[in-house]
Length: 259
Image (cartoon, rainbow, N blue to C red):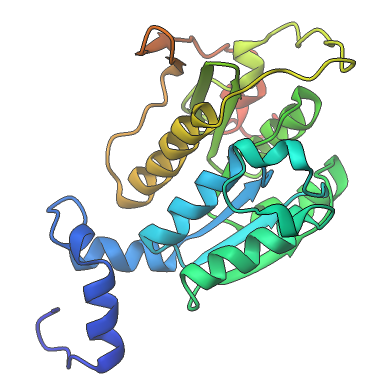
């Protein structure tokens, strides 16, 4: 209990709910209050978005935006843990919001039941403290990357497929971004055949994204020097250092007149 504050029934329940976090010296009551005041936008509510949304809610984030225009399909259920068979054909963002509100009724949510594009991203992104990329295509990821940098908002990117995953935290003006990682862009891949994936792969990577968001809010060290890769077959995690390009938009953010 914070010294000098009366312990109401509401505050007692809150302290009990997050007691295993509050007892950690890296978090404490002050850190838990920071999490409660934070706002996070999750773009993509599927394989990565589902575990990200669950763990952000469970750790006590106060305001979460959910952006996705897709609907639930039967083939999603091996990995998209917020949905059941009853949700097939329903909007992912809207139904994911219902699930996480059931986990934490005090959570404030905002549903954007459409795909992200350059126009709506410019309106939505500035409203949030952190943006989490749980998308499945690089065209939309580059839009998110560029507008987060222009809006000076941290972006936690990730991707997952088969037994492999990756994530990187992008801090505008400080760390490399997706355009530093892919300076020539990403070649278009065939969409005729979907990529295979096991449910645990996005589960692991999504948990990493949620943890990274928590650390950023609490001022703890984050991984913003490159790309973190995950290989479930070899069961290893590596950090690949990436240099920030001096000509990239992520390096120009703090230079007047560059953006």
